Length: 167
Image (cartoon, rainbow, N blue to C red; front, top):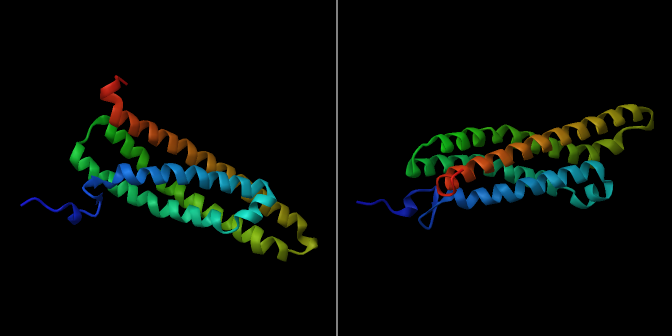
């Protein structure tokens, strides 16, 4: 007896979940990175974004392991090849970066929203130090996340299209 498409939680309407959900990660992650950087270096943007940045980072954090699991499920259907293995290897590396993105976004929101204004003028040097640490962390996690996301996407595209277009 064939299992129902509804029996597999990693499918939607009989379609593999991975190619569907990966687009959410591919769109939301760069938008979250952009919001984090804008919030770090542009106070007006930070005020407007508010809690949106850490919430978006939390959504990315939740979507990444779901996307990886869906990719593993898809691999059982398409088989393992060197290109699929490379894509999988890179994809598994995204979770620590998503954790870092969420952590920095949360710290940024808490610091600039609540912590910084409570620091007295006598501690302005300490406040500058925290500002600098948030900025360095935001740039580092943003750059690392985006580089890895591009590498994952390239490897995924090569796994899907490589045999068809000769790459």
